[in-house]
Amino acid sequence: MFDTHTHLYDAMFENSQEIIGKCLEKINLLLMPGDNYSNSLKALELSESFKNVYCAVGLHPLEVKEDYQREIEKIIDLCSNAKIKAIGEIGLDYYWIKDERERKRQREAFILQIQKANSVKLPIIIHDRDAHEDTYQILKQYPPLYGGVLHCYSGSLEMMEKFLSLGLYIGLDGPVTFKNAKTPKEVAAKVPLNRLLVETDSPYLSPEPKRGQRNDSLNLKYIIKAIADIRGLNEQELADITEQNGRRFFGIE
Ligand SMILES: [Zn+2]
Image 1 (spheres, protein in one colour):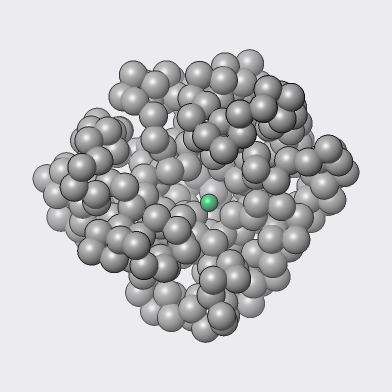
Image 2 (cartoon, rainbow, N blue to C red):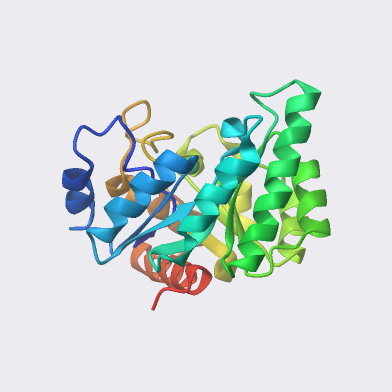
């Protein structure tokens, strides 16, 4: 099993070292994305103490402030470290941000980070909340040359086809286990198996039967089981397929 998106450095975990150690008893690989410079650094430092833990560094759309260019420079300067396997999470969040000036700044920071990812030869982890069309247009115009994943994909099936046609991967999380979540289940049924990544996005978005509680990577099994049931595969098969996909996507042997 490979949890390709987990924030185990989050302050909701009193002891990150301990929880990571516990998760690694069951999960083969973990990847922790950052959302600003200081969290990227935290993710990097933690990943350095564990063989099978990797990280991504990036400026999340909700962290984009006026001085975003300086913050992105600092983040990109970390990238010579071999533990860093992607730039992320980056993208657009129109759910929380309604102001058009701020949305424009999000788009600029997103484009800049795609260009930086291309220059340091890393794939990107994309956060897209209620901004599917603009996300798609930017990715089409500024292709991430080393790949990209739509993390916690929440769009329609039609939109998924458009993202797949750009060569992108689809990341699925806890919502696929929710009883009333129709679209994530449809996506799970249709996504090509070689483009699927699984992730917990912990500490948020706990899957059933842990919904509402603090999430950690040990809950990845519930997400894998839900998708395996939809696809008529056994859990081990799906765990192996998604682990291989993650290794290929992030360039981990
Ligand atoms: Zn995240």
